[in-house]
Image 1 (cartoon, helix red, strand yellow):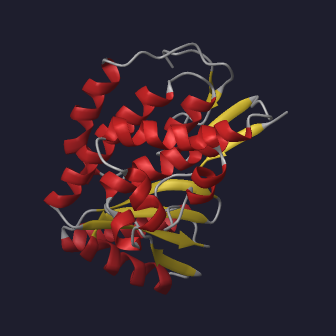
Image 2 (cartoon, rainbow, N blue to C red):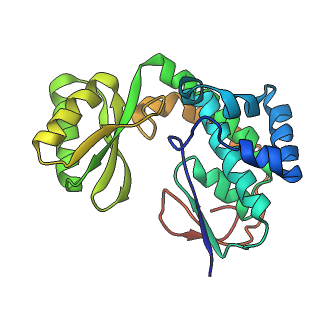
Amino acid sequence: MHAFVFPGQGSQFSGMGKDLYENNTTAKELFEQANDILGFRLSDVMFSGSDEDLRQTKVTQPAVFVHSVVSFLVQNTIVPNMVAGHSLGEFSALVANKTLSFADALKLVSIRAQAMQKACELQPSTMAAVLALADVKVEAVCAAVQAETNEVVVAANYNCPGQLVISGSIKGIEIACERMKAAGAKRALVLPVGGAFHSPLMLPAQEELAAAIEATTFHTPACPVYQNVVAQAVTDATG
């Protein structure tokens, strides 16, 4: 039994994928295909761009997606029995289980990234990981900060017991992080992401991505995908 779980935004690093590009013909072809689809040389930014370059949402998301999918396709020996992905990583998972083609998924990721980038530019925002504080306490701090400051701060990603990611305006997150520590959190760490993902601040991006998804062909999955939203196995293309 093999499960593949793919990473999301925040896992990027300068030089990512360069070894694959230089040492594997299939990987090089996929990188070049991605460059053509996107209309710019994503591979150059991935291989030699600065951390700041890679932190731009419109770059980060295609970069993490391409690196994940190329890594999966190049290994070509282990067939997954189930797949999942963290946020953006769900697109990689849908390629791994053959629900989406590489090209179609990359186009969706690019549209998603650009729409979210525009939403990020409307209001400076970010996310933070809160460690070792009960979910109910994290939620209470977020609610209190919102009520007192009118800043957007919400619980966004319930990663596992003891690790919850909050999302919101930069000022709201700064205040919330201090409050989390005072409430007993072991750490409250701002993440290297370009915006308040999984929060109401991303609503402007929702309509644009929804239209693109409606126009995309989804195939019958080769294996179940465990989706972020329902946390259950989905085995058909309409799930």
